[in-house]
Amino acid sequence: MARILIVDDDLHVRRTLRLLLEASKHEVLDAANGRAGLRLAEQARVEVLLCDVFMADQDGLETMLTFRQNYPGVPIVAMSGGGFGGLMDMLPASSRLGADRILYKPFNLAALVALLDELLPASREAGVGSR
Image (cartoon, rainbow, N blue to C red; front, side):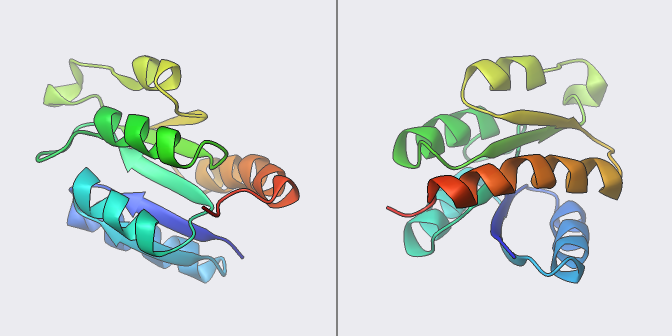
């Protein structure tokens, strides 16, 4: 079981991911924007960040940069449907800005589970995720 932080401005995405991840025995925290997500990360040890790229208030790229600076060993998964109707693909840039993996929306549960399986054993062995 891992504590996963979901940061996405789409309530439906957050609810769906929460249900799927909790069914897989993970603890889930979620926030509607980057600022709120970073506040949650300060309050609770997080083992993985799932972060949307395009959000109001504070975009995902800025959120991932700040998160990476504050929690350098915690894996980050950037998510995006392309923004602006799929015209702006910022996922490759998110990899250069700290994301460990990227997921194109819509994605299936198997793809998410495979990513978490890759990322979580490494974070547990390294003992990362705490301040």
